[in-house]
Structure formats: C-alpha cells, structure tokens
Length: 613
Image (tube, rainbow, N blue to C red; front, top):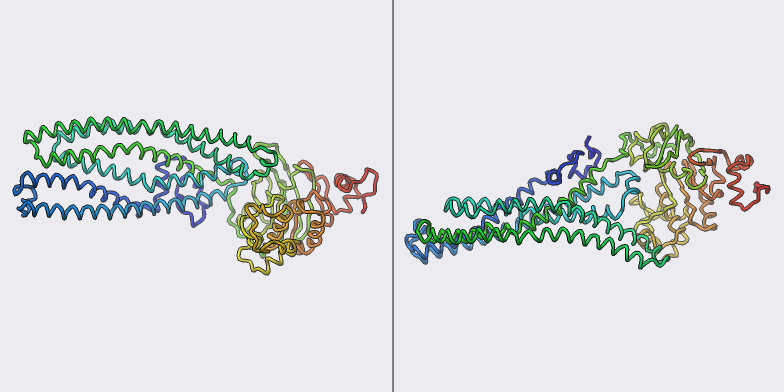
C-alpha cells in the first residue's frame, strides 16, 4: 500500500515512493524524479565546464609543440605555418575556452542551486504536510526538537549536498573518463601507470564510506537530542527560572552538546585521515609518470609536447581524487539526513480521512457513541462498550474526576485518536467515513490548553475563519466577554500577543480561544474546561453569554466547576471511563449520588446540609 496516496495535491515530490525501506540514494533519486529535466541540464553544464577546464593542458602541450617544432608542429598542418600565427591561434582558443568554462560554471552553479532550493522547499512542505496528518499519539511519543531538526537541519543538509556535492561527483567522473581516454590514446604505458592508484583510492573510499555511515547517523541522532533539549528548555523558561534551575539546565545542555561534539569528532577524525592517504597514492603515480614519460620523450617515443600534456593532465586526473574524501563526507552526511527525512515521510498515517463529504450547513449535530472501546497506547483500556447519546441542539455537561475520560471523548469525536471498537456517529453517519477536514470544520473546540500563535489578537480570533471581517471578529470577542480587556491593550485588536500568547494572562488567552470558536460558528461546540483559567467574575460573564453562544447548536461542556454545567439540558457524570449518572442538575442533586457529592464539595457544604440552592 502506498502511504502517500492521501498526500496533498500540491506536494507531489515523493508521492510515488513505496513504503518498504530502500537505500537512501535510491529514495533520493525517486524524490528528484519530478525535476529530472532541471537535473539533466545542471549535469550537462557540469560536464561541459569540466571538459573546458581540462583544455588548458592541451593548449600547453600545443604551445610546447609550436616552440619545439615550429613550422612542422601539429597546428602548422592546419595551415598556420608561422610561429606568431600559431601562438595567436592558441591565444584565441584560450580566450574562447576560458570564456566557455566561465559560462558553464555560472550555469551549473545556477541550475544546481535552483534544483537544491526547489527540492528543499518541496521536501520540507511535503514532510510538514505529512506530519500534520499523523495522529496525536505520534507527537506525544516523539520530541518536538527532533522533528524540528529533521524539518530544518536535515533538509538543509540535503540541500547543501545537491548544491555542491552532486556537481563534484559528476566533474570527478568526467575527469577520469576524459583524461583517461586521452592518456590511453597518447601513451598506453603512461596511462597504465597513472591508473595504478585509482583502484586503491576507490577501495579506500568505499572502506571509509562504510565506516563513516554509522558515525554520521549517530551525529544526526545527537543533533536531534540537542535540538530537543533546547526546544524544551526555551518552552519551559518560566519553570526553570522559578525553580532557580539555570545551573542544572546549563549542565544538562552541556552534556548533550558534548555528546554531539564527541560524535562529530569521531566522524571527523576518520574523514580527515582519508586525504593524506590518498595523496601518497597520487604522489607515487605522479613520480612514475614524471620518470617514465620523461624517458619516453628523451628516447623519442613520444613528442615533447605530448610529454608536457601528460605531466599536466596527470595532475588534473589524480589531484581531484583528493576531494573524494570530502565529497564522500558530504554524501554520507546527506544520506544520513535523507534517511531521517524520508523515514518521517514513511511513517504510516494511522487515522486516514474518509471520502464522504459533510457540508457544514447540513449538520444538525446529533452525536452518538455506540459501544466504543478505546485505550491509550501502552495503557489499560479507558472506555469499554461506552455509550452516549447527544440530541441535536442540546447542551450536555460532562463532569467527573481527572482521568475519568471526559477529554478523551472529545479527542475521539475529533478523531485525534482512533477508537478500537464500536462506532461514533454524527447525524447517523460514522465519522470514520467522513472527510476529516469536514468533520473538524463542523466542530468548534475550546480546550483547557489554549494555544495562541505569534500574531495579533484579531489574527488569533480569526484563526480557522481566515478572512473574517473585522466586525465579525469584534462581535465574537464581545460574546466571549473578551472585548473589554482587548480594548485596553496598547493597540487593541492589533496588539501582538507574543509566542504562545505569553503577553496575555491565562484568562485572557482562554477568552480569545472562546471568541475563536464563536467566530467559527460550528454546528457542534465543545468547551473543554473553557472557564478553568478565568476568575469568578469573568466566568459569570461567560456563563451569561453561553445561552446565546449555545443556541441552535449542539454543545458539549466538560467542566470541573459544576456551576458551569448547572443549566445544561443533561449532565453526565463519569468515573473511570464509565457513565455512573446522568440527568438534569436538580434530578442529580435529589438522587444524592456522585454528582451530589461533587456539588457538596465544591459548595463547601457538610454532609447533612441542604444541597438545593
């Protein structure tokens, strides 16, 4: 099964890649396939640049031939008999060759860079798009810092390789083929000597590559650990400061940074040893060519110009091989990063979208949990054969102790987690068959863990209702009892709230989140501890507006404060994933059961006092 079959249409980069693991280079080739035309153009410019770059030794050999043989030189055979004329021709050829080399160097740099930037952009988009489709359990089990390292550092590493490394490999291959072919034609014996160190270099390169690969995988893992530590600490700076834990956290960061430094050091020590070893192999071949070629020229076996060409071209053949270590180094870093990025893309989507449309204007809001089974990963079952029916347009309060399953119901309704048994119906339709976007568009959630984005107050209220008019934003703020404090802010609705809304109090953030849900105007509204972070006065104000907010829509109100759900059509009391009581407030009080005990505790009443207020 292809796990990318549900990827967004604007992210086709690796959509054809199969799920089974394949070598990193093969997976990268599949990623580059949509850009093969640009890649071939860049590769062609790299090859042409290198061919023109190899021409100067030919010109040197011709120049020596002109000086030694004069009017019997190779150029003289083409009709230019005088030495000044021949040198003029060489000067013109030199100008043209240098110009062409510079042109193709500009073109290959431009094309490879454009390819690298395009792939980087598309791969990051696809990786993030795929990440957004993964279930909440994935994010709870993983590390934000590691994901940041993959989306940023690893993709950048791949971009650097495409920008430089691919060109270096192509030019190295071009050099070996072009120079090797020319040397074989001119002097097979010299060519044989020149090629002697190449098998040694290739063997050594492969050995180094095999040993470097696990070291660079470890480097990327340590980089992820370090990014995770930094992300956690920056997000928890208030806790660090309030507990005077700066020294402790600095020590922990130093440990992670040292682990990254040491793993990098182990890889660098191995890669740094490669070039000196290669140089000795090159030196042996160069000395042999210098002596053998010189003897052949002295004996008249080859021309002096040919000997000059062979000496210079040998440098061009063998010296670039010293860069093979750095190129392999970049390659291994890129493949380690590529594997991490593509492994993320290979993560299966556990909660796939259905294909049945759900027009929001047609949603009535009747909800039914029917024999639902659910357990968080690695934990005991929380819901077993759970049943709950919420009539369309009604307001249902859900109360109970922490861990009783109240918020889990909401997460299952939104399909943030997948049920293991039974079914959840919305207007008689199983939510697993509905398009996820349609389902979530039909539900407005105000969570107890409010998240505001870095931006203005107005932008945060309009989040999810993008493009809403200012008047509608202000009306939603008024209904959420947020307009009063917003107008006192320095720039009103245009005040920047800071990252995660840190410039606002908890109660202010909660009211903005409530306004956001009101502006969305969903058929189903879920308030998950929506008044948990507000003061009593604000809670009373919000409570006054709830009658207007909940009119003509289905509302689920999860609360610890029982006063929030007192006027609900029905109140459901949960204990350990089960419904132990349900009914209106007055009926539950008269039963003197679990709900009555909770009410008594919150009202500060003794066991025998009258609960009717």
